[in-house]
Length: 170
Image (cartoon, rainbow, N blue to C red; front, top):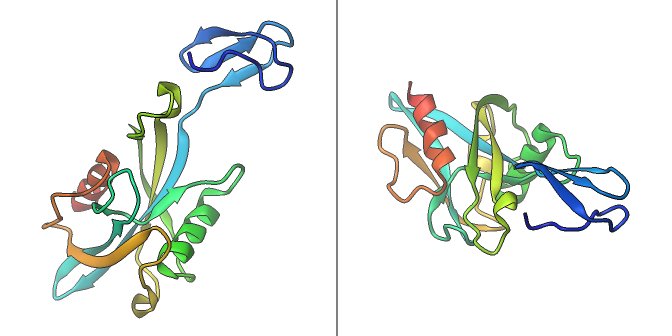
């Protein structure tokens, strides 16, 4: 357990389970949850092949690896609104219609985080309709490129990305 003191009153936290701590003073339940992320599988069909838009990460972890565009939700942010925000920041896309198709929980590889803060709940959305010629790499990505779903790059970041893309192939 990394956290020892209650964020409300400063009392001692007591372990109740792997995801719940209780304050011995005020009784506050301190839940340790996976951090939510949103990710987009943006698809197109060209020459009879299904393609997905991947972005090259410009930051750690996995700097230089290919990724699905997306990122962490802000506190209290609606997942679809968060996805739209991330796609606007990273690619300049503004007119999208996301459809939730896959979820995955994984460990975020940042060793400086306490173990209980290393888990993410990844929400993957499918996007088939968008203005194709209007995107460009921005923010924390350095490149955006189309890949055939049946020949994805080996250096794909995060296990959840590969799981989601494999689900699209089925």
